[in-house]
Length: 495
Image (cartoon, rainbow, N blue to C red; front, side):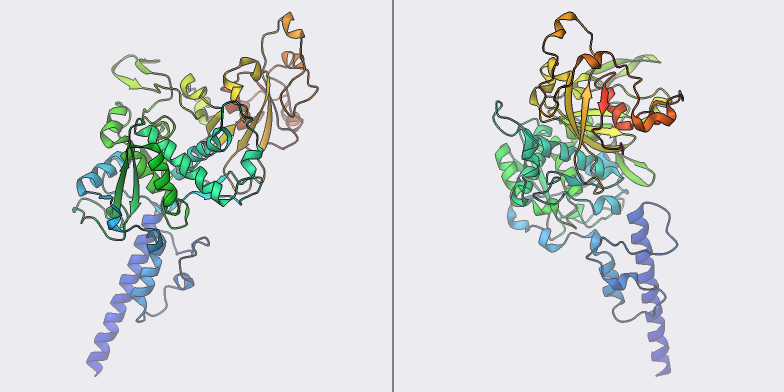
């Protein structure tokens, strides 16, 4: 009896050590960093049991294996968000899974960490001032994907109507849950259809069963191995299918951002993506501060449908400093519906800020994804004519959203551009822009870019880097409208 008791105690001790190792392994994989000193429960994880935050020094019991399974629950897609293999999709092959890993990470042993796995498309409160808005991650690569989709949601809500109809912010706030689902499905299908060169698109969903057993040099994530691919030849079919399975992209635990990213890659096809690359880029993600962030090639794939690694127009055979190149660099070839603006303080300081070309800077519609010091936000205008009628650019509104829950209202910025004065402009000086009354445009001609806001009074005599005088959003806007005068309309600049 003593021998049996001793053996049972040893088995319990071994099981406890295994459970402890599994916990540490999952924590390490999720963070992409060194192991923390202790496990801290994430408050947003509703799926995880309160038992998971208990002191790990508790003796192992018969429920040890069950508790370990609960720990991994947030990294697995709930069965309610999986599809049946009989739905008609094509199971992912091991060869395609390896190619997918390589085009994403440059190898087959990296997998998405916790920050990516927990990300999905989450709307703000329906029928509120922010009903159009997605709630994004504060940091990390998933935020970039979310904000591009946000820009396409705005495009749908503002401009998905007859050309001559009036576009107003009212269409952005009178949005219920049904319209939110439709807007998200429209945004996702727009991006995928463009990536498929308007001929085809693929949608990835997760099945309940694994499609293949990976090779030894492929790291299992229990997600990619269960992918089912659905391919469509008509855009309406893509949108309808996504709408029917929208919960797979917008529910907690769905891995919705990763699913959409996989769908984007297969819509473009891996061979086309590799052809889009040049000698400067071999994969779509890179590691920064312990997280996987989007390279410019992935941003351009989301915005334009091509994974070109640079923001200038066309291709370049010469580099500014080194002269002729052995291989051409690939830039943006076509004007997209949604634009892109870039401002980075460190790059400006070192004279390394890439110059965004007109293809991205002047899109077909007045909606821009902004990369400001490595964080992502959206600028937009409901005035469809802003980019097609130069007179509209004298004085106009831009609306700004940074994706964070702390922003309770869409920020309205009034933009005045410094233009060349001529006597013919003395006629009709009053602005006809809605919401701007009795403002003499002639005043803008006399204001230089060295104007001061009331919150800048302390720094008026300091000639330092411009970000210490002007908010980052203003510097970003001036990359498009040089010398613009920007009024925050009473809002204290927060970005």
